[in-house]
Length: 327
Ligand SMILES: [Zn+2]
View 1 (cartoon, rainbow, N blue to C red):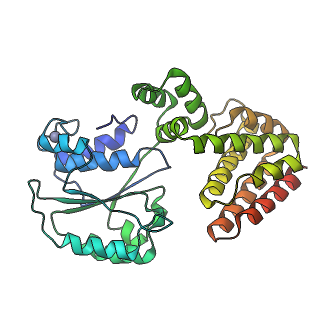
View 2: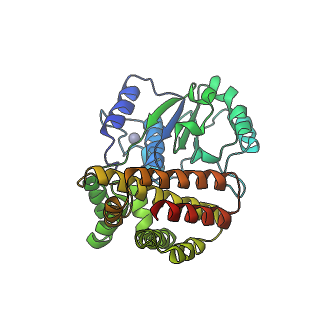
View 3: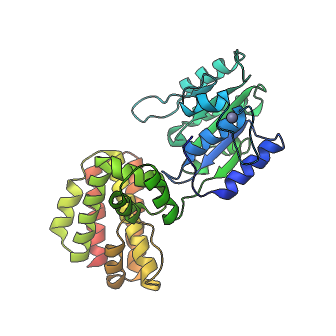
């Protein structure tokens, strides 16, 4: 299994649960995208299945650990998502419910169901899973990952043990990326963009699409700084009409506005967004009130996108609002 950086407290808690034989049957790992929730879902699975765990975690040597490291353990079911939204529907939930009833016919005596990225799990699907999570057969375990606990119904949350996963420090992210074989240059560039979020740093290096989005957001940031409405409109127009692309870019601009607000109070403060330099310039240009207003405009834009309003229309509105705020 890949080494986990940071989150020492969480690792300690999970190992204590294992030692005391109190690993819960239903758990949620939540935290921002890229922070390592899936890694923790796999870690939890190996704590459940390892045949000779140590004080510090799964042994890494037994049959279960070895099979798990190839991601193809027969007792671990990665529940597939469905449809364009890549979500979990009531159909998925019912399929899992009927599969759970079949007793495991394997060495570990367990069946572990992993639901990754539950942001698109419908209310009906959650309700269909509720009974199962309430009274699961003793061999069944359910692991969910999501960006926020609030993606789940309170009834689901109350029946699961919830664990928050945090991003690492920049030093830990650097160490992890170098260990994964990325060059020092790639690592430095990625960490300057996504800080201690190892998953996002890796995606940034590997994925041209994310790099394109960062470049485009940089162009948007510079148009705001120059108060160039024509260029800002053109940049927003080239985002296109893909919902996820729009949300990604709006979220990056939002972090930029947040960073500008923080830096205007304390110019040495840490930043969370991708553009430290642009945030510094904006912090000298904008009042905190203006930065907050940009944040509000973006939040309204995101809500409209989530309610399926046409993307180009929403972006034109956000652009107009930003220009009015910075004018
Ligand atoms: Zn083991």
